[in-house]
Image (cartoon, rainbow over all chains, first blue to last red; front, side):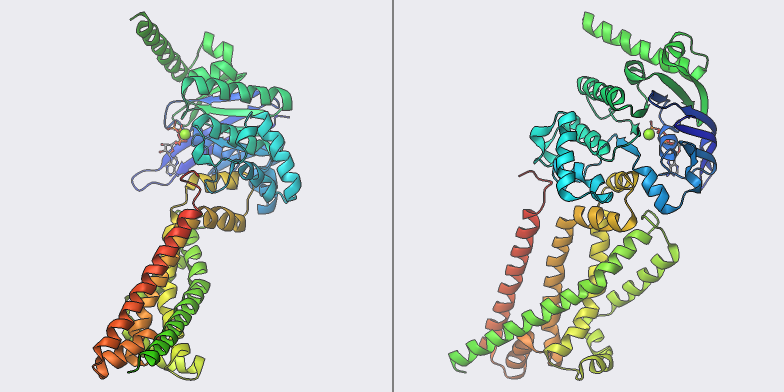
Length: 259
Length: 221
Ligand SMILES: Nc1ncnc2c1ncn2[C@@H]1O[C@H](COP(=O)(O)OP(=O)(O)OP(=O)(O)O)[C@@H](O)[C@H]1O
Ligand SMILES: [Mg+2]
């Protein structure tokens, strides 16, 4: 059984002039323990897709199964419990600005009713994993983007998730910091067998950490496959376009280096 | 008027004014804070949108806010009498002050809470937080600086209103200023009383801003 399974998922936003079909009939499986990438141009529906996976966005049609359980059939309470198993990290980190780093990491445990002493103890361990033990007492405003994302990662680890969803988690970071965050995600995936879904518009991210990738094109699933195969022989136009863009960027980089 | 008597009168006036202002603001928050929260969450982009509820609250608040305070004071006199037993004096003035404060506070709470980053609220939902946790631990806590600025503004506004209540024998410094300055032409007493009001306003403003800055973690330490 796949850990995440989308069956015929569609999402339409009602807009004044015409409805926006953000997702159309998506069928998709993510297997336990893999790092799964979703790539597509801006507006392709990537965020909508990943937000459907924890029901932050309710699909207009279709089923979302986590571990075989249909999210749309859960009661509010069951959904809240389920969400604790599905961590999420965001492009803009979304930390609580009025709490220090340690208390930010404690927050999901507070929600889960873990005692304060226990939460603090565990929070320190998670900060250790992301390499930020020395910043426990700092406030988010005092951290760099990369450090903030590490706190966000520690925070998702705090609810012991089986899945981590990343929506453009590195898009606000410079290339070097992107590398370290990607490595951290990879390490967490390997060490704790947490399934990771990464949403991105950067080929590089997929190339560096994903096992498999889905290509979204205007709300339609254009192609799914092993990263190596998709890179070697892209079938869809969307994948070809994204690869071409990547190649042009590389060439530009080379030229810039030559000069 | 003897200096000593005037000092006693001013001290009592200050005490009465503070009593009215603090109690009315407190009661104003008892009503206004939940209203402000309801407005925030029931609005279209809130965490539990409800057009009808929002519209009803919106209209009630707008109506209450557009009635000039002096008119409100007189309009609700029968109600005040019902609640307190009489329609003049410091305790009676708390009723109209509270009714004037609540909608103002509700609006300020609404605008403070709406400043909270939607992304942070979303993150809390993704962790499995319920509505109650989101409201108290995310919205109210994240907006605390702005909420405290609101408290300062509310106190200042209510202080101004309480002085106006002097016109109908509302008690406190405003009452003194009107009795001596307007009815008895003792301009000296009036000026001193007004000076005390100015000082009170300054102190409130200064203390409020100081505290709200102190608890803000967004500017580093
Ligand atoms: N809440 C919403 N209301 C209306 N339309 C929306 C909403 N959210 C997304 N959309 C629309 O749905 C489509 C897909 O949006 P989505 O945010 O999923 O794209 P994306 O692939 O994540 O893009 P980006 O790379 O820019 O983040 C877009 O056309 C967008 O305008
Ligand atoms: Mg997006």
